[in-house]
Figure 1: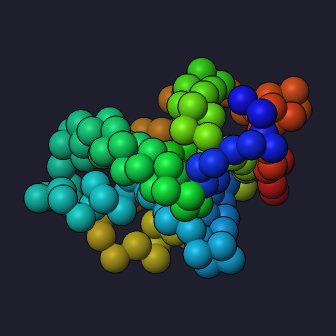
Figure 2: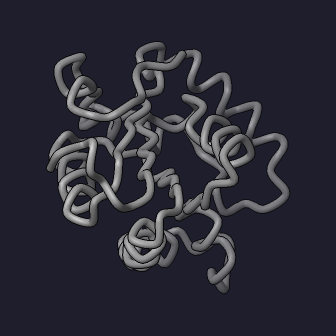
Length: 169
């Protein structure tokens, strides 16, 4: 698609591990641009009957992300800026969203949060755990750290594909 003739809005993808600052950046962009922020965690927490039911919480993630993407595509087609705060752990997932956004005529931006210092991420998560008012998103290192090996940070080459964005610390 010719980027000079795009008709849709702007899709902003925020990529990184928990504790890397994804939601903080997403809220900043939301405020600066009057954008629509779609955070799966917010929707899951709103519909979760039992805040301690981790199995149901995890089951809801895919359904909520799919609903948010359907709404996001509609907003993009109307020219809005939409921020997805999903984490986007794999290049394949990021590419899928980007290609669908391009089909709508949207610009696409990718912001990759620094996820390299795992000890720093856990320091931030532990601080966040203490500030949470609900147990839904309390994280324990032993439950999550082993799964983080599947995270594929974007390369500079991948970032260059997007209209804007880059690496954030």
